[in-house]
Length: 90
Picture: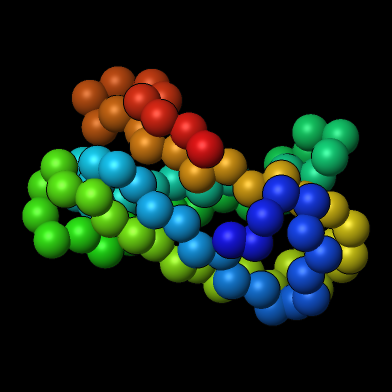
């Protein structure tokens, strides 16, 4: 949540689930404007009961300080610790 194309106000929280928790329970995220301009990227922790088990995540964003008032695209990515390649993306 929120659903695709949902209207939200700053700050807003994104929550989700993964069927298999990523390595070290860490997911990267990338925030883009609709034209593809990258606004920010960082990482967050997934809550799970153990390696390889399902997990959930929750991250609060506040884009008002960056002056962003329109739509954004947020990608959540599992990155390979071995070579930095993308293993899964949502």
